[in-house]
Length: 350
Image (cartoon, rainbow, N blue to C red):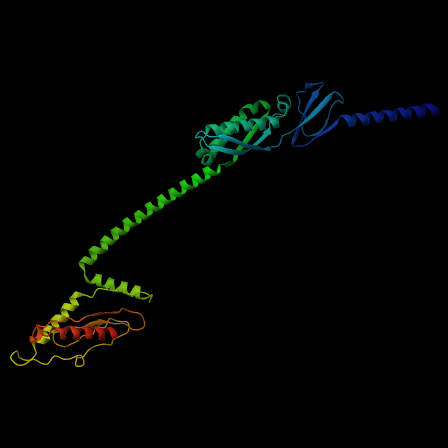
């Protein structure tokens, strides 16, 4: 009896061991992002195993797990010649995923390698059909064309291409320098056009200002004085300005009127004053203004413009000698010029 019990226990243990070995050989776990394709004795079973625990027949079934996630595959750089005969090197990246696990296992040996090779050949074809400007600026259209070229054969492999992007376009150094010169020339052209337009608008404004000043001549003199003030503010320039002729004529007429009220013509005229007896002079004035120095001797005019140390305008006008004014004979022209020069010097000292 004891022998029978021992044999029964041994048999139960043997069965349990066999069941454990069977379960270990037949049990499979499919992850959430995977699908299981079962080949039983080399024949594809129509049912695709979903995620979770599943069982297969040991030694008869073979389970192939297929990843259903989106795969990011970089495409190696491809060199090619564009339609406008420019050598370029283009890199790209492909995003795809498996939509039919059975076709991905049965229809193609290695769907990843197949998609990679198809992407490289399609990229070279796109390079040859496109211009350089399209590769640089119209990439969206090229991406769509490249996606269509890769997705067409991949549909039969149970793969769907979601997106294709061109990453980089490498140009030769000579082409980069040529494009840089072209861009610089274009920027220079636009700058010249803008400058010419600004000159045209400024000329119209200047023409309007000229017509306005023509109606009011005093505005031109005011503008001149404003320019003098603006330039003299730096205190590092020397100005040479024309003296108004109208002022000289006014002073000459005033001198002639004063000479007409002198002694009678029949009597001897007054003795010509020497340099030491010159008439009163106005030699000093404000440091920053225009100071006239006037010699009131008969027949002579001296005027000077002076400045102080604050930085102003400095010039003198030599005297105007006129021997015929005031009844003086023509034989004494030197006195007018000498005294006028002295008046100019006194104005300059101001």
